[in-house]
Length: 154
Image (cartoon, rainbow, N blue to C red; front, top):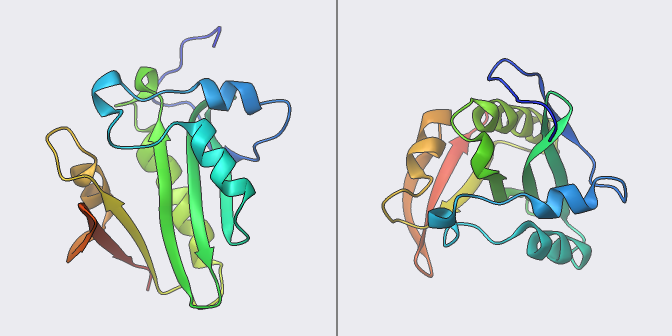
């Protein structure tokens, strides 16, 4: 990133392509957040081996700043925010919330989309409050140590 991004930079969701793959894989959360989300290279590899997923790079001001992987189980239907990250250098600038609203808008266009789910690791510094700030609420369901949240889309 040659230019300094400000919180007002436009946020978009872009396809991950051969041209931006390396830059997306190089994005990293802060070291103390490593236990909360898998590296983007792992997420991209998992995407390659599933039929019901959607991934995008999160851009701000034309630069990659984050990554999203969505599980799209349209046959159920169940839409699950599988992976979500903003590079540590670009956190607390509003990019994460603005991009997540774009993801939510996308999910609303999918067949029978009435709700969306996410899980989080319940630990200090984890993403629970971020998701709650966007409107997700705890369901009380525990998925092998990760707690589930639900967002109503109606």
